[in-house]
Image (tube, rainbow, N blue to C red; front, side, top):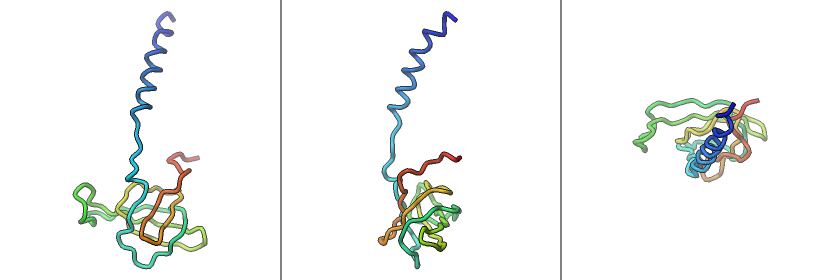
Length: 112
């Protein structure tokens, strides 16, 4: 028991350092719809994400594209292909008229 009290300060300091070093990459906020086709702009929820292997010839870092299936808020279903792999099932997203898919704030990786 004598050693329990002195360990609290280093652990608290370590937790603060780790929290201070975390960062947010603003480049992953949105993805480009690489095969626009006939999509309808609006908000929806991701119902599935598939990987299209070696389909991204524009990037040397990530050679894959991602097919995102969406259930739209106004009704209906559509799929888009994007170059961003940060979307996940159950997440709220927004499709824009200029060919982007955006994360909607307030969604997280937590499942209930």
